[in-house]
Amino acid sequence: MRLVLIVLMLLAIAPAAAQTTTVSQVLQTAVTQVIRPGMLEFKARASGLRIAMNALCSVPSEGTLVIAKGQFRQAALAYGRIEFLRIGPLMEDNRVDRLLFWPDRKGIGLKQVQAILATEDATATSLATLRGKSVAAQGFGALEFVLYGTGAEALLQPEGAFRCAYGRAVAANIAQIAGELAAGWFAPEGIAGHLTAPQADFADYRSENEALEELVGLLSHGIEATRDTRINPFLATAERAARPKEALFWRAGLSMAMIRANVDGMRRLLEQSGIARAVAQKDAGLDNSIDFEFGNAVRALDLVTLPVEQAVADDKQVAALNYLVIVTGSLQALIGEQLSAALGLSVGFSSLDGD
Image (cartoon, rainbow, N blue to C red; front, side):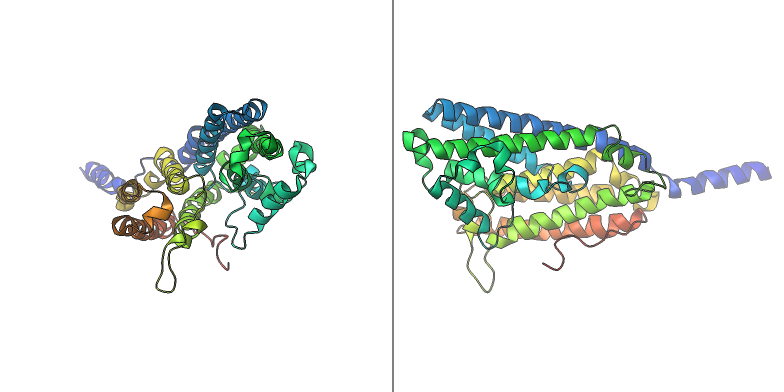
């Protein structure tokens, strides 16, 4: 009888420590089902962009220009879904800035791109020499100006040949970097193996807890970066009017779509990896709470239907944007504080601190 009572007591206590997902499963799923597929998608979209720019320069026409702009959108959004993954390959060889130099608070990148176009610097039209130039002149920001900035109408005229050649080199650079990212995440002795099977003698991840802490930190800091570098800069405050031209990709009309891509990418990692389900039973509600707030973020984004320069002048859409700021703050607290504590982790400061 005493043995039966002990067994029953153990069964009653067990759920308090139960997990629906193990840390090992989280790490494996994050890499195999989210990160690697995201890198491959970006590689494919970047390749499409390179091909489209080649076609535009070879046969300039309204049709090839529309296709090039469409491929720019697809490649940029594919990158937007993975750019919060600021570890490993993305942080090597200045890739994160070479792909997208942002925020560009002093307009340094824009001035460099304009100078290249004004002087028709031939070294900017070759991939080999372009890669040696400023990071701001190599990535999506530069290509957006080529396709949408002042003078872009020349792309269909003979005088636009240099502009197109520069854009073609930038697209080739983006495609090459995308390939390097994918290769890095599939390398036999690369970051994927370290993240999914940490070892005490590794310099990066010595335990599963350290690897898990990295993923949670990426989510928390990614939410913060989206709010502080993609949303807040163009919103009006008590001290200043709205600044729609400080929104990323405002020329291409992709400001809100890029924010949505950021949110979708982070939500995908959280949901598919099961990070928020690797907690004790007492914290089981966190998964639903975080998902609910991600849903609120998506609903707020869906309400912003106008181009950013018009949205900031529309009361309803401004309200949606301000609500989005609140939601991202809630998400950062839920992930960076509550989820981190529930998992026994300590998420450190982000790269934005001290800016």
